[in-house]
Length: 212
Length: 314
Image (tube, rainbow over all chains, first blue to last red; front, side):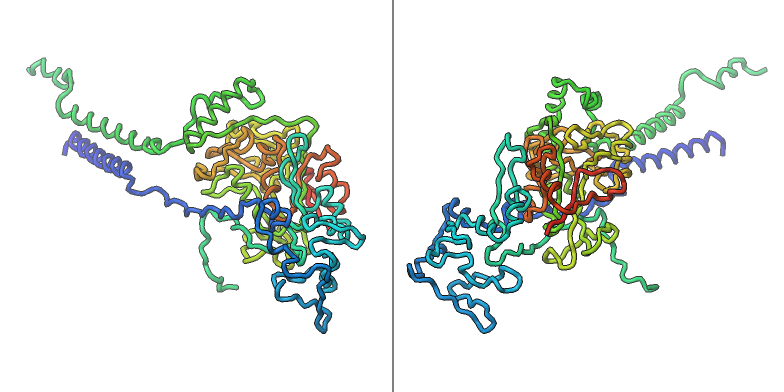
């Protein structure tokens, strides 16, 4: 075989190899790296800035059905309702008010409706200092017992604030006690957490290590 | 006696058929190989435009140049997402220093702040980039080594644990700014440490320097669904980032420099997050720092002096 012939064969071989590689590249025969597993978008419920609950004042503002708050549709005027207690001095919640869970205070001692409600006019509230407050203006009532928290709330430290921190640029939106706390059971409710961070690559479960 | 003309036939002038074919085959193969190696360029979507490449440093831009830059960003966003954004360059206000206070007694670990932040700041959804990491820690310790962030119980808070969200602490003495070789990140007058995403070279020194793991890197082209784009954007804030640049919490610069609360404050159901101007004695944060008993700057011993305070009450 002459040198010239050998060179021809080598070059021919290279041409074949490179043509093959070109075709493979263009056709993407190796495939791109597998796309990462798509992370589902977070439920928009977790982006909601609404407070935990709606207060009576919110319902009035939204012009919603307030028939649940029409006390004298059932109660008689000028006749204070009678409270009944069981043997352990726990208040018996009448079936008409079965949605109320008595959970204000940790020792079950705050068991008298008229600690806050006004027995002579059920549409109002009364702190122990003799004031009479409308149902939608319950915050001073809460403050009559929870002094330090009320002071913090007044400064904006306790509770939700939204809107503008710069008072000269826009209004601040302050929330009231009952926007977050249920007055009958004020402990802040638990909730489902939003999804945690997803790992870039899924963790392969290897099972328990036998050496341990 | 040989023919003298035969000497000239060894290297004949011109090209014979065989060498022509050989040369052209080699040439064609070479060209095809070069073309094939350039194939990935066809997949390139986000290439640097001349405008972006020649853009000046943020602090050297004149207002007219800044307008052109904002225009360019708006065009790029519109081209990519089909939404015309409102891009602004908000400057720090006089007499304002932002401080954040987080009530560890109130935080219930619901992670709503994490996702409100992602939605507000146009962070990549795939892969996922989040500025806030909520740590779950057992009562009686503040040791982040004992923290867990992948918790997923049906309900939070879990008894015996408290939750500590960690994000950029906007340090007064920021280590990330010191290490940046190109001054693409710096501390502004109102205390926010910002990043110029067009100046960042993606060396990730700042990520290594940050003791709070607050900085996030775009390893791939970020992807955001069109319907979740927040069109209210700021140059140093939440405008969409590119692959290869660093990002982090900037106290929602597009909101806070316009006087509003950050997105994480607005969404917190427990009212655990407080934000404001510490130079105003009547602001929430000033009152917290004045009246609350205990507050912590995370990793205080690092000497970073964070503007992010954790406190307890009750």
